[in-house]
Image 1: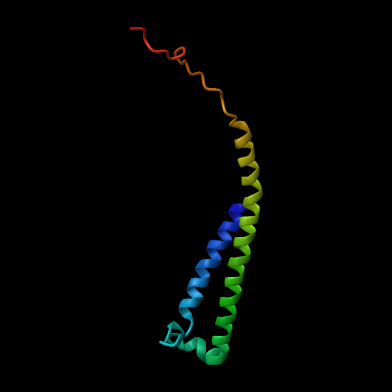
Image 2: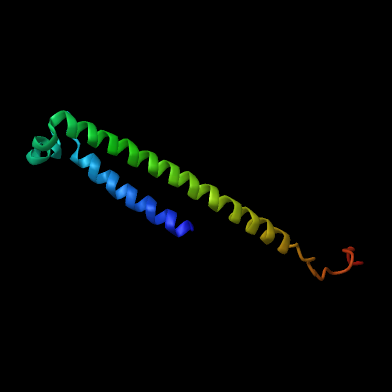
Length: 105
């Protein structure tokens, strides 16, 4: 399931990039290059549709990202706890010399 969500996030992100590039910004965007799209529904209609698509795709990316994070959190927490419990400290076997006493002179 996480793989499906990841693929959907990537697809929505690519579509979002394309929609943002098509938008008509202050400096002129690619939207002005598509004259046929403006003639079909009017300039105001295409701008409104593109803006709705932008917000919808942005919301989709956010929701899918949160869903992916929620799904990943449960599994990773359990595995981390299991790994911590499995890694009990082993006693060190250190061979120390006997008590240090000064040599008699």
